Picture 1 (tube, rainbow, N blue to C red):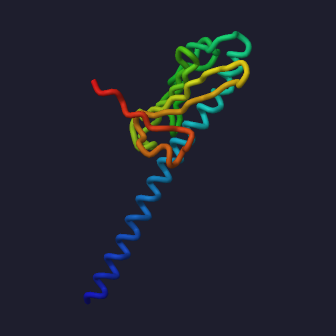
Picture 2 (cartoon, helix red, strand yellow):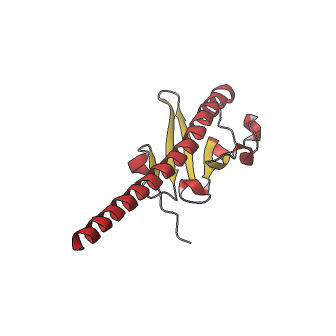
Picture 3 (cartoon, helix red, strand yellow):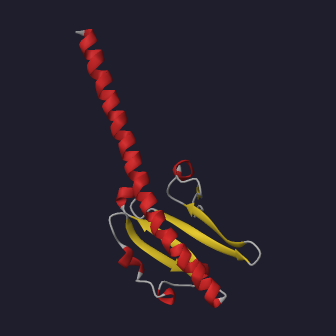
Length: 140
């Protein structure tokens, strides 16, 4: 009887761990989808800068749909703001409703474009998406 209980508990523990891992991978997959959408628009921001000598300040200025028009299974919105900053708000499937990350561009005529990815929501983002870093929100 003891062996049966130990075997049953071990089986349940493994299944629970598998489910947790699955949720983690599922979450990272949705964050990655959001990042992919941002990367596509990253190149559009670079192209805009090369043609206009400055970064765009809005979706409208770049002739992109309104931020909420990007909504899909992973994204709530994608916004281009002052300085060409791309902000992605993700759905609850990412693990955080309206979880955000930003891509911030800089440009040096000798070195080209450089982008910094950060998030105030996903503490372990650098493990799964190394180019991104977690930045704790400023305390109010």
